[in-house]
Length: 72
Image 1 (cartoon, rainbow, N blue to C red):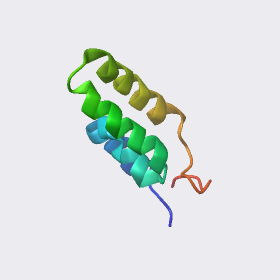
Image 2: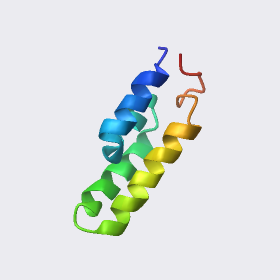
Image 3: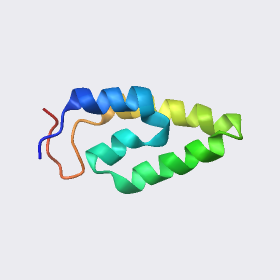
């Protein structure tokens, strides 16, 4: 199944802290870690800042899904 890069970016922007964009791309372990960081980050400031940086890096660097297929 071809996945859209635009959808990936939009999910990262609006739901990035929850790791939804990584679930979409098939990176389940990475997405679960982001989800856990977000829940802990609700109580602490540092994990929130790390999560925001992580999402920005994902937007700029991830060009393929977990199967190695390039986004459309």
